[in-house]
Image (cartoon, rainbow, N blue to C red; front, side, top):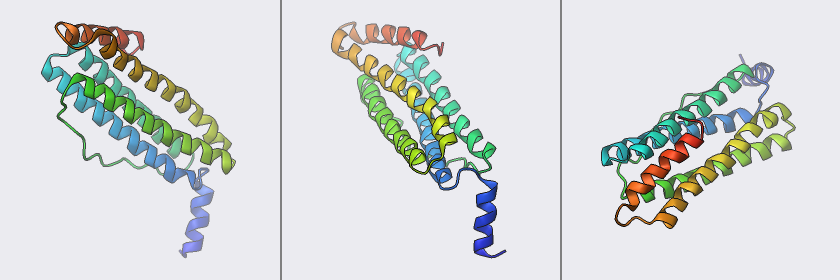
Length: 181
């Protein structure tokens, strides 16, 4: 089959057109998020931050579900979702606070990526994907808010004395309030 014919078949098969590549990059980002949070959860577990670990284990699974939701969407639209290769995950952290600082920075990057996809979809009039991505827009606002609330605990409580223990207890309450318990 000639290259032009292959392109026509691909376009007829997929409703996503050039959006598919962007969505596959988002699958990779969500997969890395899941692996990153799993690594953070393991570190917290090892360090005795039980509630932080529970929050991050649940968050790792939630990010995996975000990845799967995108994967199914691409395939249902006639595209080809690609399972990403996950490498370069950090496994050692300097402090519990560093973890939540990294989470906020990461979630801001995920939000930017989603906003780029949404803007693209609007521009090319891919309104089905634009509508689908609105769930991610709302979810990202929640993700950033949760990370900010977690970081505020360090400022409000402080890390001295029983501060870290108290922060870990409060992280458990954040976990319970997210519905991931």
